[in-house]
Image (cartoon, rainbow, N blue to C red; front, side, top):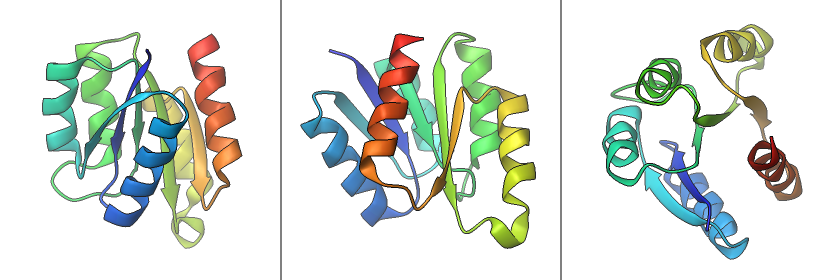
Length: 123
């Protein structure tokens, strides 16, 4: 069974995403920020990490860099919302430069994230 670590400080979104991924047949771990996420990553070694960009403690770009240091092969899906006024495309380009495997802007429908996750596992 493939495992996924979800790192997002929006508790409601995090819970909904984890439930949806669990129902899709994945083992899912959850963290509310990059610091906690990295601790879980080191303990559980998931196959994929889904991370938000803007979070307290350790934000997503820092988390991506640390993930790549710990495991250069880890697949990373970056998700973030509310970035239009903050330069979403520039932020996502930066995330890809730092090592994101794919990026999605919130809001998105669940079929989109499931197909993206599936595609990442196939690559």
